[in-house]
Image (cartoon, rainbow, N blue to C red; front, side, top):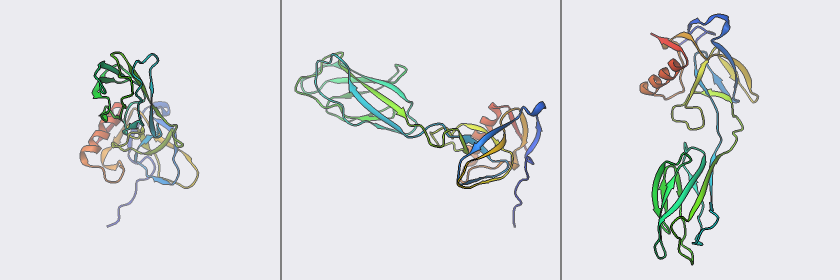
Length: 219
C-alpha cells in the first residue's frame, strides 16, 4: 500500500493571527524536507581544544594534545595543581563556569567532562597553584543556521527543535528558503514527519520541544 505524502500545511489545524506562527528558514543542500517534518537548525561545527601553561608556573612540565568529545561546552577550562609530589602532582580540572569536572595526576592520562589530555612531568616538579588553561572552541559550520531534520542525538544544534516544514521541498546543490511553523499553532500529531529511525520515546521528546515553542500536537 502506498502512503500519500502530506500536502502543504495539511498537518496544521490552526495558526496565530497575522501569520505570527510562520517563519522562513534556509534549507541545507542535498536533502528533501517533507511537509510536516520536524526541523532544527545547524549551530556549530567541529570542536577542538588546546592547552597552555599559566604564567608563573614553578613546574616546567607540558600539556599534550587535547581531545574534545562531541557536545562538550566551549570555553576556557582550568587545570590547577593542588598536591605537589616528586615526579607527579595531583590536580583538579574545572569547567568554564568553575564547576569541578575531575581530578588527575601528572604523567597519567586524564579523561573527564568531555576532555582528554596528559600533562607530562618536567625536570622541575609542579607546585601547588601551578596550572594550565584548556580552551575549547567550536569551528564555524559551513551550514550554520540552515535547516535539517531534528536529531535528538546531535550535538551541533540539530538537537533543538526549531519548527515544522510547511511544504515538501527537494533541495539540490543550492540552499533554498522555505516556510515553516515556528510558534503558537495546533498541529496533527499523526501527520508529523520525523528523521528516519527515531524511536517513539525520541519522538515524544520532540513533541515536548514543540510544546515549548507553543506548538500543540493533537491526535
